[in-house]
Image 1 (tube, rainbow, N blue to C red):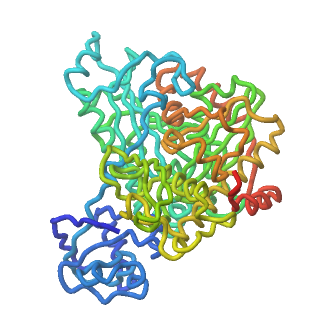
Image 2 (image 1 turned 120 degrees about the vertical axis):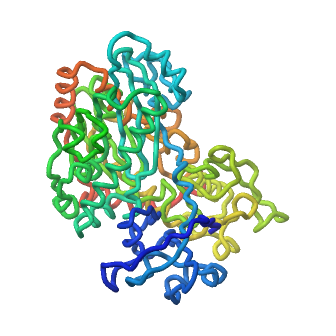
Image 3 (image 1 turned 180 degrees about the vertical axis):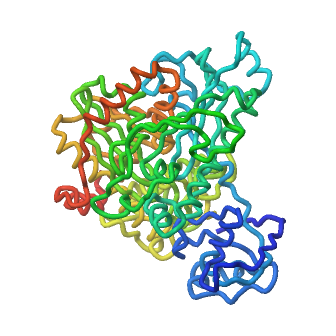
Length: 550
């Protein structure tokens, strides 16, 4: 892994947590962000730091995950270093501050340009403004400026938009990494961390992220802080629990009982946001422990409750899905792990500049490792640094198409031993990476098949794919690897950030009618538990395989 380290040297004082406390926890408590997708379990190898002097002896795990060159230069894993001694070290330069996050409801052109699948009914066309002159033109109406913000708290990233409530126009957009990632990439890691005593740190982390997003929005729009009157927040159930300071004990073990799923109204002060924000806050309601306000917001924004038979899929660390329409919904969630967001993959990265989003490969005996990269796209067009979720799907899809792996997902030699070179050998996609994809795609596909079978409405009339992953994925590759079934071909609509769209719509809609619709959606939704479902478990094993004849 090619890691650059900041020039700044951090002088970390002696800790107070005792000899058993890890350096990772000390850094987090001191206010430093360290990427640790595995939650400090020592499996991902991402929490690298470089000691300026007197680096501790490497552990067996560090000898496995770090190169000899890294170890000799003082690089260690923060989760492997224990002790309370003062130390001088450097942190990696974080690309995650530039993470590419979808902040629009319509994926087709980046803006809401009419009544598309992802547009908000009734919203006027407006491009995001990022300069004071543009904002001044939008806000030229008489009277006090009245603005509201919508925030989607994702497990990996946050997205936010700012609206002029009088003109019903979007005037700014912002995004950031969710810095709770320091406690793990997936919701289960966050739940465990909260239940083991880090709940307040996790709450303060997300509050700081929201504060920073609001500050960026008002700066870009050129408006005073007090112009922001309302804040509408959506997220999965765990993210909303952590934000509100609710106990996650019931989310971590069967029967998975949330503390509260209802629509919440309060103030910024009650959530411990910065006192610079005098805002009323609404957190939209959820349905269950693993189907949260983000899915409810998507159903609301897309008016699925007024349709006949639709399927909404939001694929991230959890594959949340809803099938149904005006007669009600059957909802579920399949634990896919962080693979579709670049986690647990040797060359995986988040959606940052340089992340590979799509690729085409071919066999070429004269190329590095016998594989040549024919086509390749990266975020921001930068030099390839690794594969994000859609690039990972393409890598596996190309390996299937070229016959490099068999139906069991096993690479042929030499790729089994050496990995499949990507981007002319800049990095390699390895056997263990294929296994991670197999588990993630099997969970999603088995969840879809089980949900549709239990719903019993036949093939859905609309298949709506939400989120940044869905907007960049290649439909053919998802079918090739078995993530989606054949009958989905040609019927998929990529709708963008439907969760954020729901929060935005709530800002603009009549509040009484909006609450009634949300109550109807949640009241007519039934959860399907996959954990002990015999069909799901059977399908999960079947979907681990690849159809190499496709």
